[in-house]
Length: 386
Image 1: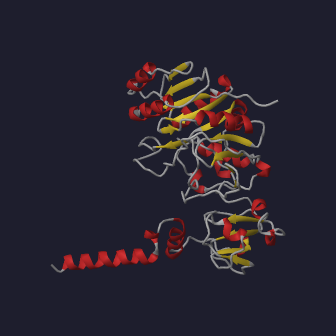
Image 2: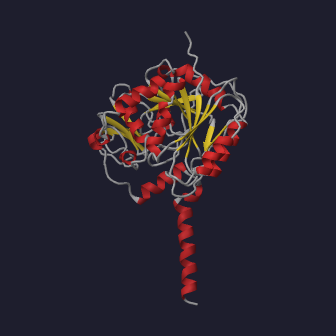
Image 3: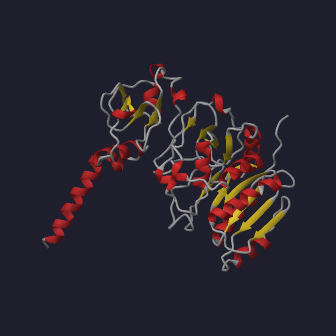
């Protein structure tokens, strides 16, 4: 029997009036079926009654509206946890923090996606956001084009995430045991060091420990303004992605049949890569193409780090970087070696520049940067001798 989830929309708000006005304006322009529920949950620090009054006066034309003005300050983590609990009341929820903006057909996609994936107990949630970076060190990420419209990562989605009550309760049962994240392996130390206000690092640990995945779209149905607030010290554009504006029937695929499956470091799962390069089939290996893993759990590694006793190596010109291995392009940028032969040291400046040259625009190439440095040096010398 097919699933029939119809998620309630939950806006998690605090004290950013402009952000609240903007997300509610975007929600008002979207398309919904009859009787779509809206919940506006407002954390209370004693100074944001204006946000509460605006939410109370907001006219939701598509169904029932409920405003929750908490009696005390919760903080971001506890507030999102309270919002997640609403999945038990409504069956499923779409969590939208106040600095998000939705596409006109986000709700249509949300219903289609959650109903497609809800029966797979390996799925921990569905995201409406096309993740453009690697969590932690924020290098650019481009999923492999496997002819479908989704990809899977062992990481929590936090910008427009959808949970069913089953998704939520499995996580909450584990969370209530007060887990020690320092013992979770393999998990990025950068993510573990996120502030105590982060609920996401706990959900990420849960996903890793229980071998679950979040489903992400290759076309984004929400974007994020990253307004200054609890998580953002100042305004940034790093979270902005293009919105899908037209009706489009997404091509979903099950986890087992997808070629776009990634671990918690956003490295492609080895069994998916082996489909394209049979020379690796006999090895028990993992990928570290970003060169950012703190430890390895497999006997062999594909990495951009320097190695001894290299078994095979590949170029790094094609994007995404997995394709260089898929096609077996000869070169020296990517090495395949035993884990004990990988030099686990901090990257040199020249290696960092090489990464920038590969991932970013040509303004970051060594030659161009050298010209800038020379130009600045000459300018300073001229000013000095005036």
